[in-house]
Image 1: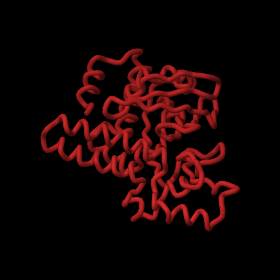
Image 2 (image 1 turned 120 degrees about the vertical axis):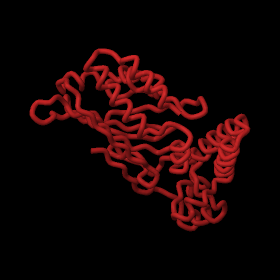
Image 3 (image 1 turned 90 degrees about the vertical axis):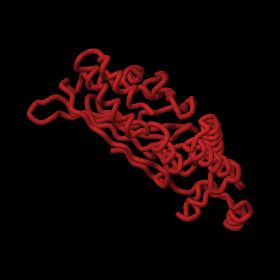
Image 4 (image 1 turned 90 degrees about the horizontal axis):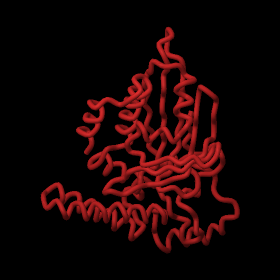
Length: 271
């Protein structure tokens, strides 16, 4: 089970008076790193929209402008309406965007995380599927959104994935729970482009019918849940990516290769 939790407040924080002054002084409710991502995505959407020169392009450019403004000012009216703030301590501490995520078991900020879960039954034994998945460098073979995965040690790996507007996102991952032939759980560490955590579980299907592979991912979309909305409208969202990846994984391990039809179908479904 993957937990998405908001950790405790940092010990040794400045006085309440200084903290309140920082909140009032700038009125920002978006963390510094999130602002940078917001500007980058917004600028890409503005450029894409301008090139289209049609109504969809105009709407895209306007949405991009909203993201640019959000990043430039550090103010998000949606966050304010929901009483959410990820950047209130930026003026006092040079705090990372994920400062409230602490401890080995913590993963992503529960206030901003989106959960995706899918499963598939595969006609192969658990040990075989576990071994294939545990070699993370195999994953780009069936996860088409991944550019590469580099294994750095027994528990650390470095991931790169495709992002909207021809961009890439990168993060370092650490294994936080592992039971051979049963579960692999991980979380991003450091200051990732997209904070994420997840687990893949392997369990016997009923009546000896192979193995059930269940993938659960919690992730913080760039620019928060607003960014997830843009991803859903304009690009392939992670929910669809995971569903498609599991389908390709099943085909790859059962047949030894991905069929031409499956590759053609994936291309036709791509945005």
